[in-house]
Length: 97
Image (cartoon, rainbow, N blue to C red; front, top):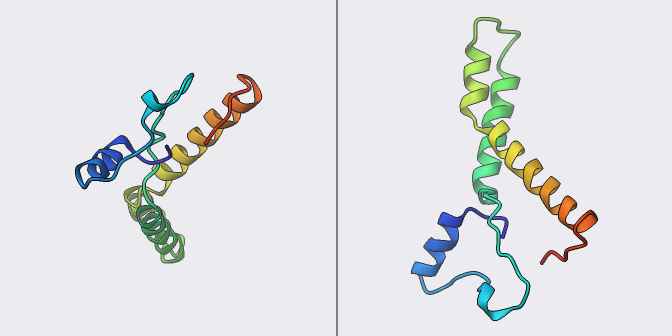
């Protein structure tokens, strides 16, 4: 499951849910911690604005604005999940749903 566990638990509280491992054999449900598209898009837009309005600033304002966008946090999480899923398919010969 690409989303964070907290999001799945919130859905569960609303009567929705996620895949239940007990329904299947040889399954592992893993939450990858990727935030929803709205959070990722908002972070991208904040990072983009920081870059476009920097005017070559060297006093740290750009760095602060860019880091506070959390864009790199989202990219790191997406890349980590992509790597792990690729590894599971290529090396462990696992199926991913």
